[in-house]
Image 1 (cartoon, rainbow, N blue to C red):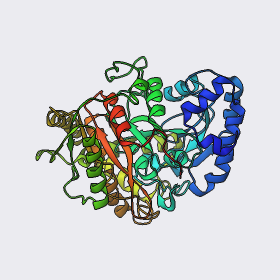
Image 2 (image 1 turned 90 degrees about the vertical axis):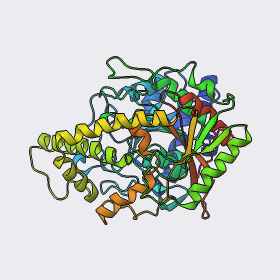
Image 3 (image 1 turned 60 degrees about the horizontal axis):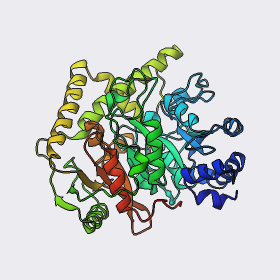
Image 4 (image 1 turned 135 degrees about the vertical axis):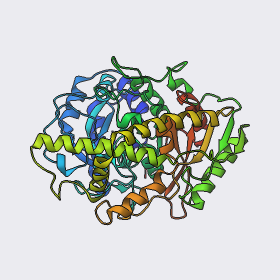
Length: 469
């Protein structure tokens, strides 16, 4: 299989060829490695290559929906047996290989996928651009002078470069949708509790969820069918779909009522005109299919989402750092953390229990507020980001840490709210900037309704397979 034949297919298409015997798993893997050799250095998307594991998976020949398809795992809180989990941090630079495996990884292996390696992330996922000191900046395949986004920037860059057709991603404030927006991919953040985070119960008190970034709707849907089943002992779970998600791709959504919001939930964030225009153009396209579009304004009582996300994420990040320091038996050193992370950790250590519980209460109250706000609407449509993909260095966590933290607000302005509410939300590529970088819009539906997103997204996209850079 040639590299161009490999990149012309999504995961579903590759698995079909393998299952029919038209190509071997080894030939698919060799093509992936050829693309990695060509594009890996320029994007800096991978922090670990596990060719030996991928070869072993190819030899094992496990059948399934993604038989023989290579994929990548984000190097943050998701363990692959035999590989270290470094969390984008110098504090974990010498982490031992994991002995256990996360539920998500086991499920991918169970449908025939092979783990080719791990992808770059900001330190502990705290960043909307992936530029950690540990492994260096991840570059956008569409223009390597620009960011691939974060925190799943390595996964998004790898998929957009054609190295793999889909890759694991997590999202605690936009970390699936932001890099998907930057890199021109489909990025679905599922409902809270949809995808198991086992063996952990939850992450960031339920703000963070997991799924995959993909080049096609059908891959995302089929992967959600695989990953979306509850595992024993889950703390909660989203309601199951009426039928497989794969059946929703290409299905008629009917005539829906969609609310359009082009101002950010945080009134202090200015929205780039290109991002507003993308959302308005997407609304016009949906209206052409017969949907009713109604411009809306956010509720006046809405608490700025960052006030919730910043408290919860800071406390959990500080806990992770302190647990690691206890394992190492030493105090924190100046070179342990990136500058922005050090600010966050210091902030987290100062937050008392009352303030943390207040943030949890606000999270649930916000979910109820937005559920009421959406009453009578089938979906909301917004820009995915309030800004276009920034240049590498603009959000460097070590150059000007305080400025980097402040700069994150523009990229996460529209995404973080739906981590707070727990609703499904997706970034769909729609348009280009004047210099050719991807633009995207966000679709949001009520809790538990990923099916409507998949149907509507199909009407926004020209064909199901998104191009590589």
